[in-house]
Length: 414
Image: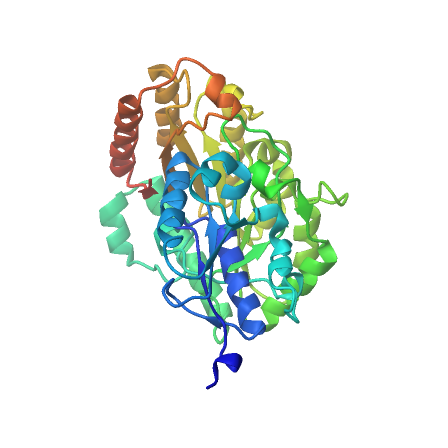
């Protein structure tokens, strides 16, 4: 084939942090290039363009992204750095890279670099599927265990009863969906951006203000996925609970609209990254969906079990209120899955504060826990909070929490 008509080659790299939103962005970018007659390859070598979708949510993710960039730029082909890093840590990025960058909130600007493309980025269908093996805190549909195996693991306890109820619900769901794609997790992004101002988070600079998809567009997207046989839906966003703030709507209004569409089907919904403040304030609004066993799982960004630390983080809720809300959901559906995110070592965190987190873990017995150590980003408000917790103490606290979670038989990731 003559060089003049050879396909251009592009390699799109997903963030290694496992960030769901940026991973879906990378998937959509691959589709964008495929639809415009580029050859998408799996290696940097041989690529005319390399698109790296970065993550900078923690110091570790930031350093990993910078390391990858430093390695890629030495290889032939043009590198374009996308994702959150160009918006959160521009100074550090410019120290090692002087090429083209596009931050997440400006993702459509990719068209400016490929102006001859017939299909523009906003015209590319949304991506809904990808592999989350390493960072999966969601329920596995096919994870059905014999009752005696559960009894041996949990004994005659509330946890045992919870597991039995959950498995009965899953088996009913499978029976009702024979012939459909009931097991694959289908990810539905409902908005982008954030309205909160957490003291430790720098991602808002990169993702911008909240931008919600309209209910009409999401109903259409959801209907298409139902027509394709999907039944296991995971709602995600950087700030899920702020859906609708910009269009005079709300997430509960969206869920009601989607329920009209799927009323002839048995579906499962998981809500990822719920803000405790919203849950406490609006706890009654999702109760009907929990009662009907449509919402079967939530992942809540708890962060700490100490009200004092929560206040320093600029997250406006009380632990007791959140605890009561989550317990009310379990009372409605004992098989309801509650996953949680925590981190240890926020500035000024005392042993007493940390013990409150341990107490919360003991009392709630979450289904899955993501546990991180606090990492300092000097441009954020939390950097000004003193005294700091040493890295040695942070790691010690994480090990203590992990030991507790193992004792509780609670799966966790770091």
